[in-house]
Length: 178
Length: 460
Image 1 (cartoon, rainbow over the protein chains, first blue to last red):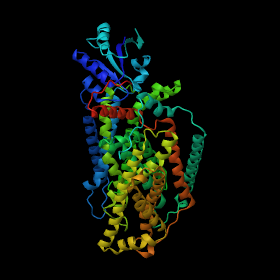
Image 2: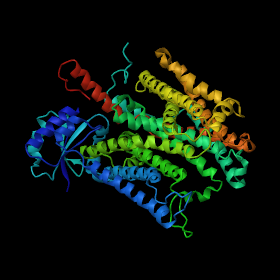
Image 3: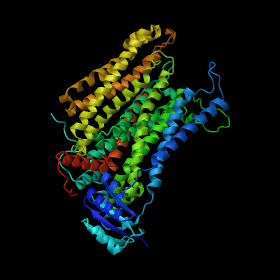
């Protein structure tokens, strides 16, 4: 059974204040659904910087390394051609393909990294059942407290959220208001 | 005189959302249908000409020996170059935090993708036996022969396929928030479902946004050296050869400048009618057009400098073949009319943009952009055809003229490009709504902080 409290705010600053206050009280499973990303909300939710760039870097190095190895394998080892006495293993000539494959694999890591770490390709989420949640991609900022949070209490959390004057705050169970 | 604003009026987020996204589901009039039918017909003609070429053989093209490269490579380089401005706008300007890019980057990236598709057709057809195209890639074949990776042509295959893939991923990642927005706002159920599938379940969750923003920034950082590398590699197809007129170290930077130059011209050619037709004057303002004109002027001067240096080096080298190519072949060989077109379009026309008045005149911008597109096509013709027509030995000299198949395929790709572009205009938000809303938010915040008072709680 999935329970959550959703509070709808008119702007990012208001949401950020509420999120910050909740975190101060020890809430952990909170998230925001916003039409665009703002500094305020990021700070309010206390999210650390994404580690994805590190993975992208590893992906890039891997792509470049594999490409260099493959080129050496093809023209330096498996099928060396002597063209005017030029050496079969010629690092300078391997630069373009090494670079391109590094960029290619890094980009794949970036794109699929967002899908995996950002929990995408999940076509359904309980919030989609919420009436009026469409505004989260238009002009409203929604704060979400999941029932899995250890401090979650339907009544107390609702009161704590209400202090920040959201447009509305409601408890949902399987996407239906309670 | 202050620069015109980036967003006209004071639209709310909801108004921006409605105006920018509704284009994907509102009914289009007869004008659109006519344009769609026309470009679709042109696309069919293109594929007929391609079928004819593949069926009969590459001999139906005007290529000969020594002019073996001709239209196939001219059009390839021209289209690839056009694509470069899209990546430049979306990646380089993102890194430099040029916020005016927000309303034209989607547009320009789509232009990149469609231009690269046109470009990719040509080397494939130029193979003569396109069904062996996969030989360019290393695959474990039973004959144990492998691509010669020390040649510039496999570099090119790697560069173009990487460029297309990275552009596509970058573009699609940028699209996700808007696809999600259409999923939430479109009136019909089937449309909400369809866009919902493509939105991949994007929920605007801050926990997604933080990875999203990091990835977007890194992709911009990757695309920046990529865009510089792609045309450098394309230029090494020439620079690695010994043909006088090709064998030059100035080629990589000069090709990259030319690519961005022609790409910005194409952005103007497309954006000027589109902003009027789709009533986007409030987000694609005079300021955007003027900035494109400034970049055209800057890159145009780099291209002109490239021309100048080519001549200087030809003379300074004392190499008789180089001197013959530049001083005799370029102004007088068969087809040298295009050399004059090149100088007119690429050297003289951009000089108009020194004047602020002309930079802000939409008609001047539009016709100048057409002239530059023509000029850049002429440049590739000059480099490829005139150099090959007049190689070392006079006994090898031969003139070149294209056949009707060459011309049909070339003009066909323009129709195919416009056809893909119309599909894009019809089904995908042309301007990134989420980025423009973010820009509006930032401008709003700055405005209030700038006046030295606290931002009041912004409604909506």
